[in-house]
Length: 588
Image (tube, rainbow, N blue to C red; front, top):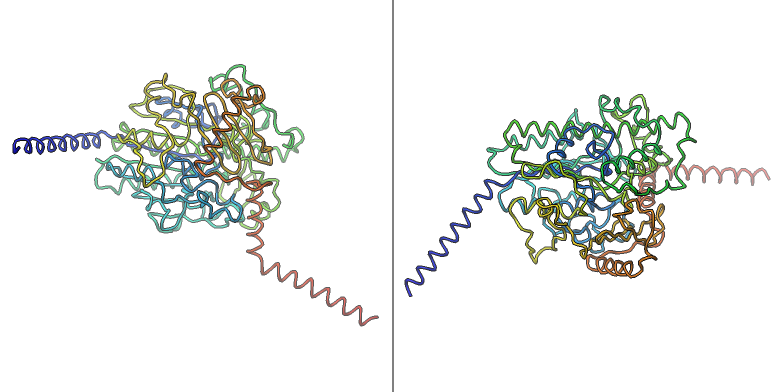
């Protein structure tokens, strides 16, 4: 009996020792991971994906790794960010929609609080379990109170913008409903340095986090979420000037060029079709020369902002090389949604608010401090080419974005068109770190899948034909299964009706096949309804529009901020009317 007991203890000791050695070996060999998130970039914006901007550092990472051309996100930013850092569906994380787009009364509904809830763990929290140092810089937009700042969600060090967007040169907001912007360093609100430019500062801060470490033996996870290329589009003059003539032919020409480039690169079939521009969009030929210059200039600033971001990414790459950290680092680069088609130029309220807050649109000072650039719906639609729609919509142009995975252990110079989703990033990172996304009953499940099996063997699909993925945000919805997609786009560009497309042959979503394949359509509708019920999708009221909701809240904010002046004005008018009426009675 004693011998048996001794044998058990020895076995346990050996098992413990072996486990400890395995953990140590994993830690010693665990890769550093850099997750870079671009804001509002379409699939073809990077140079390596056929875009006009010069992005040599991103392009080199693409050549040294894999390009995913069938990667999907939410159509709006904070739900995408919630899914990116948790691996769980946005409704389960508490960020089903942007708080800025949410009608009054919905914020108390489960899943719609607009900040990360306590039912999810971030990838940073999980990585800390196996000894990773964790950093985040850039746009957070998942909450900025004591429970939701990055320091409370697994990040050792942080320098973040709490809002949905902001000026890139100084601490001010970009919307009437958000006139101020707040940055936080390690959980405390801070002022910005005098030489602040968002892309530069986020890399500076990330490098500072490394420099503050006592040693470099532990693996690190850096999450860098750039403001580029979210409105206001801004970039230093030297980055803008090379593009001032690039977009002068207009959006129709750009759209066609990207469409042909997508065919050339094998992103879409050679016989694919492209949808027409929406009839309510402006016609390039009907614009005045001054209007054309304004639009082409904003596009130049957009390309310059991408190049500026790439330049600073290059600084970080060089730093990692100097410190001997680059060879063991895996880079993951993507965007949170497609191009932003907000019609800021056509919004009188926005223009007046911009003037009041020292924003300008002087093409001679394009991109510099105070400049407010925005590409508009027509150029956004062109940037989303070869697909349809853009940000806010679940058409492919709003949700298909670039994805690059690059590193020493990643196959080189490969392109894949296998469907994948933004919830797949966290389980991929966990597997890279030697972890498995084991479900803990205290938290909602990770709904994504690791990309590594496909990365290591392209013949293995990420999702099998019988596996579906649901998506909903801002009252637009989609469901993917195999080559098929059903989709409902909200107003004003959509009609809230469901359609079905075969994305393999028709990635531009030009031919509805719902009536031709009623059985398949009904099966997918049933699957979507099951998904919506499981995650807690709440349909918005009839007439809801994300763009209109932002506009409504902006107007209310302006009225609130100017209530004293408005009240004084109306008091003056009433007093004047009373005086005239009294005078008229005396005269009679």
